[in-house]
Length: 139
Image 1 (tube, rainbow, N blue to C red):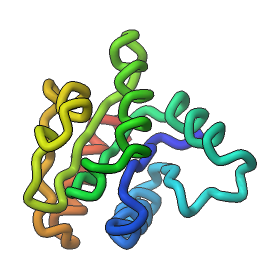
Image 2 (tube, rainbow, N blue to C red):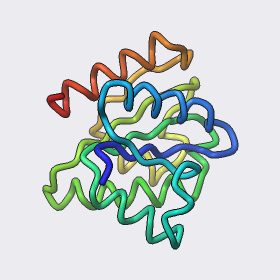
Image 3 (tube, helix red, strand yellow):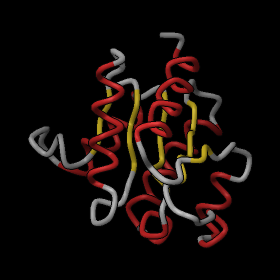
Image 4 (cartoon, rainbow, N blue to C red):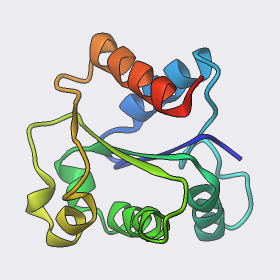
């Protein structure tokens, strides 16, 4: 399974998610994100399986993601793993001037996580993120 699960708003951050995925793969880090993997059978089951098996849960955070029911649900699955002392790292990557406090549930899941600044979501910020993830994954 993939090292990194990328959670994002498909309506507003698909290009950013693809750019991050390309940069991760160029560094030899595997990733999974919805939109790339629809062919993997039943959608919800594929998402849960990918989250259960990733080492890093990466949230591409913008206002649409903060409001997204699906992003909140994906984050809850990752948080449950973290809460059960499983080997997972949660990384919120802010690509828009926003805060998880705009959604109480998301704020609860992310309150103890360091938010990585990705504003604007340009190549420099993405490469900084990739470096941080590679260091955390020891690759």
